[in-house]
Picture 1 (cartoon, one colour):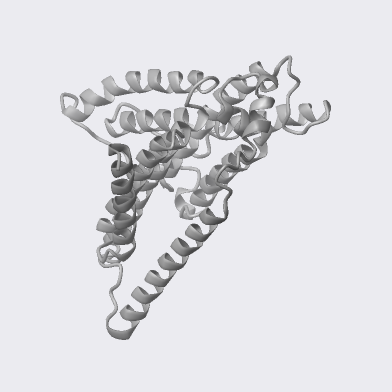
Picture 2 (spheres, rainbow, N blue to C red):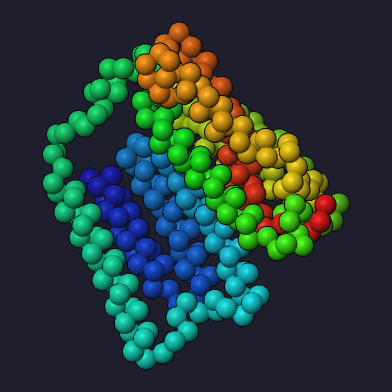
Length: 316
């Protein structure tokens, strides 16, 4: 048994144990922490499978952003006197709840194992077809080529879902605050640690985001990873009191939200005249994908930031 195989087996055991603990955790906050740990372990697993793009997305969105949203939701529940215990009931109701959770986890695990066993061991899938047409996509990263060229509608739908989530959050706004500013006003000591990092890390984070965005054409990276980093550094600056969120009635903000999806759809519609919807002529495919990535990263950063900030809570 090689060290690499031992590492993979330990990783599988840890992922399963943490996932089961997250589902069965009695305390809500403990379950959320375990979920975040699960996302980080899943990112490591994707790295072991050489799926670096998926690992970056899992760490940034699956563990990072989703974890923040769950912590925020748990905090609001505790303020209302709810969510102190995932299972506040007693007796038979708790027993049936736990049995249902275990049955669901066991059934899902069995289904995944059965599906994996049915896959051909030497099946190449669509990989040869993607590699054969990679040169025509205009970029050398096969993941970006699939997400923005060969199956661009998947990425477009994912961004539309994020935009719909933002609209759904805004729909929960009390009438008196409609059109106002999301989130609470942040205050930090000008000479404190938070203010220091709020000035230092955004510049570093911006460079990291630009690198991820530019590298996405040839290496792991892309709009989702870059947009997540941009959202994180902007939120850090807001937490440090260096900036404030714009009002949801701002036309500039709404333009940023729809800019990426609208441009993606526009370019894809123009490609329909060449015979393929969401496709690009080979002569302009590189420029088209880079432009779409840049605008998508900006829109994704705005969407993720607004999701974290939540509903408008104060007037501009």
